[in-house]
Image (tube, rainbow, N blue to C red; front, side, top):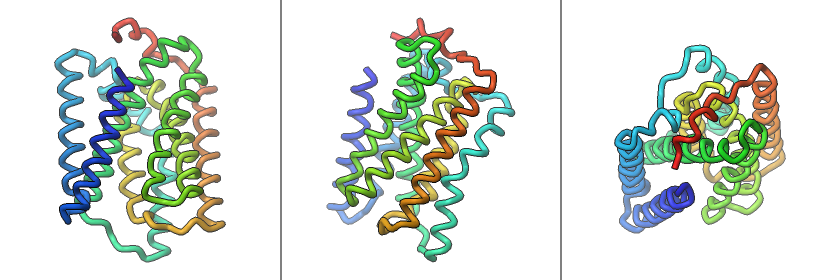
Length: 236
């Protein structure tokens, strides 16, 4: 089922982007399409009483605090944007990447995490690594609109972010903190589109990737309890 959800999301995203460009309204149709997809996914969860299983619930305040170190990437994006004096993106582009972030968290840190915890049981590192690998591979699809090496570094960075996100999600037993951070990452990275891959950019990608993996490991070693594994039997 998760494969169908991800494939459906990918098809809707790329088809809507193509139609948006062809009609002369960049990102507008994509924003509407992803908004509808997100609403449909949430409604399906609510009707199936699986919202909490997927982590759609409010976490304890301390887990919001645990997401603060994850703001390194959006902070770096803002810094590079201000340094390059780039223009602000239009509202439809922002809505597109924000809806995309929410959809991807529902799929990768919601359904997929629950599915993987059934497979790996108490192996939190295995769950995080598998999820991160799939999330990184998924981002290789961006190669259609940018260079190979830039896309490869972006995929590696996405994998490292995904690794930390899984740890935070399982620790908080909620995907909401990571949805917020992912939205901030995407919104702050819009102005980075078209960036030339130079030494500074490559170093920044590597540094951020290493930080997210290290932070995930730190959290994992800090008295981890995989709460969601107790409800895995509810997933069908």
